[in-house]
Image 1 (cartoon, rainbow, N blue to C red):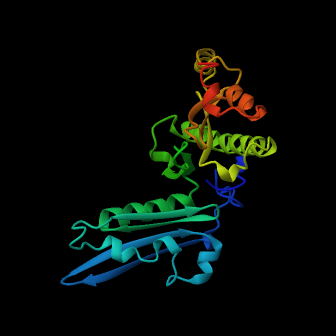
Image 2: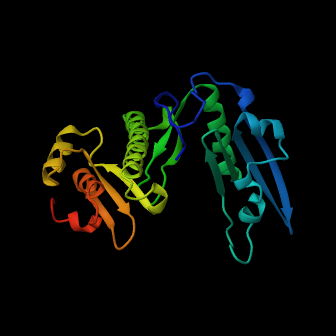
Length: 245
């Protein structure tokens, strides 16, 4: 997940996306002949630094796209889309006419500000993923759902930073000794459901925390269970599991 997310930029650090600047984008088509077949590609990149490299230089994760996207004996179909993104931008490469047409339409949608962009998914074992959609083609209400999911990712990142600091401050272990310490909201933005789940888990917090430390100390815990563990001197985290639901 990008570091230091800001609420107003939907997960792209230093980019508010409120003004379209075509200089930040690189869009081009290319083709590669392999055997008797010619494969067509389109590439869309958003990032000021990548622009300086020119069209012969791609983001690292996409540099070898042809070896992945052209069919081979290991992959008879070949990938038809490849993507990469970080806190500064994103890159999309597609193959075949249908996908190329859509990527062109996506590029045009950026020009018209007809775009929704946000972070979706994630959890204790995976970061959230970047989602880009043409707003005018989405079902009614989807833009609000995307905004809520993006805000949840932002608030989750804040929570994670907070609990990492608590763990380090308690001198129990530094965060680096944990394989995972990942909070997740019970029902972000759904007040009634959130209250029900807080009552069910007997906690004052509207989230629980997945921890994977050591000595079989792993699983979902309430904020109170983790706090009591951090205050204790000799107890293992799993000993607090039965204190609350």
